[in-house]
Picture 1 (cartoon, helix red, strand yellow):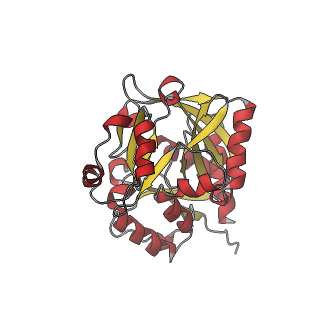
Picture 2 (cartoon, rainbow, N blue to C red):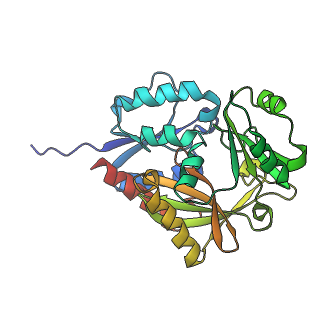
Picture 3 (cartoon, one colour):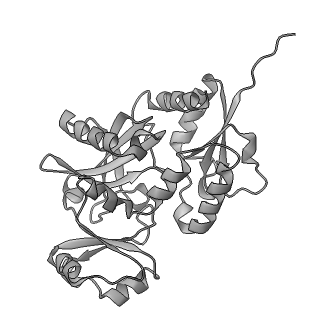
Length: 293
């Protein structure tokens, strides 16, 4: 009697508002099946689903994780005890708090000028002087996604410290100088698969807005950036171990006079825009398949 190896099972993690997964997940399904992998799109909060039955869990469109921080962290740690999770749990926990940008700045990576505010610590007079010197600034929680609780303010009109902390409900937050090129040129997303550059997307905000996310009216289109910009993105990918070691990453940056200014590294649940670049869904499926070997 001949025995055939069982197909490996992969859970693609989504959230309750998108039970069928995002477009990128749906595009993955036939390519995973062709690679001998049985995929299933799973809401991370679904009761009664034993993820230990899977060979691999891949975080994809769990886009409510920042609204349920403690619950998500507990779920993530419990899941990782029974099945491998990608991206790696340590990377996810590091990336969820935007204070990681301070570490990257210390490594020599250019970020938007930023004041990091602990929920209980004071904002120093020198930091206030810097904030007031900015024409515009963005205030955002340290743990946030999809521009949640994010405001664009005139630098001279930033509320006082007590009001800011009240708005942020005592949580840590960032005050960043606004990069006007986001409005005039857009933000570039460089997508990496298995640590290697895959493709890029140009995201633009809707007229009169500063947020590039689709849910806020933003748009996205395939971009073929100048080789110099790709080289700069590759330098970030090589420098930051969390990028080069991960299954996927999105490097969001703005080009200012030919120099990339890093806005964020997206290592938890980024939209990878697999439908905009031919062959990328298949490439991502192959990368998942390799991780199962």
